[in-house]
Length: 417
Image: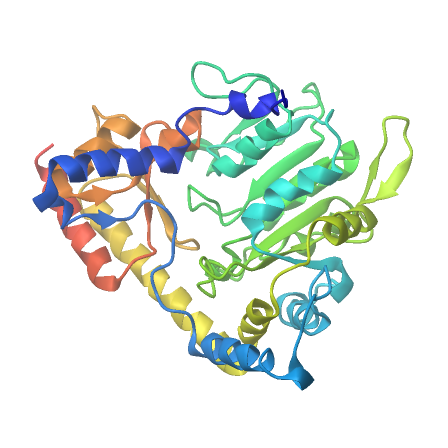
């Protein structure tokens, strides 16, 4: 009989979003009338249509495939040069960051890349994640065998958890000199789920730690476009030395509305090295290139033309309109929570609002309370880790009318608690 990858059996039975879906379905089945009023502010999926520039570019790309003279078959496994050059110019060169087009790797999204990067990293690394954390970082490490079994409270043996709480402004503290060395460190800013942001000084300290300990930082900037405060870092490569210790993940999902289209990219600098068990050093760039050339034919021509359109003059303006829309929702939700007397974090340089549960509720009981009494779906904080207990996340990805209605319902709901 064929054997399983038994690491999959270690995964917690109720992955966060499927568990949310299960509870919402159960409520809807039992309360069909109330189900019609449900407003979903849980999963971070966009709601607004694709930018017109993208639609036009994708239609033109379809037409290209209808003619012999413009037809495209297999594309370059790392992405078309014209898109990588646009990314390098607008996301890096225009911000005085020296990232070359051939250090940019196109993919179907940063979620995929956060797991795929483990293909080129060894299985003996000490892995550090923030707590609370985007669950994909955890589960992909479980799947490839980097952890022990799940613990009763949901954590996994073999992972190092870095607490992120209001006390440290949701930025993990640098390990002390007496702590075990960390080999691979996941950081995500603007942060999912807390909506928090890291400063240049804090990021500089993590880069210094990585350089001193020969560690690699996996830096997820899927929500980079939401950073409005110009004093905050948009990229880890703003920090001197980061090209020698960091890989950066980017997504078009939350700025260009590509959650259903699927496109993102990873930056893997040529200066970044890792070593074998015997101490031989090798450039990750070459191995990451080989990984893509072997396992993928990149993203479709149509999708890449759509992504290229995001960098056109019209596309950039339309993206900004989308960002403004969702940040306006975040401000509305923040105000609604504050008016209801709740302690609120995030939602300023990020599309997520992180809120402390009212006294007497934990994350899941407050989720159920909001669903049953206000017909609002939020995300329970404990689903992101132990330090998320006692909090919940509200997504600003919604219509303006829904955001306003959620704020109104929150005020009414908390008045009855």
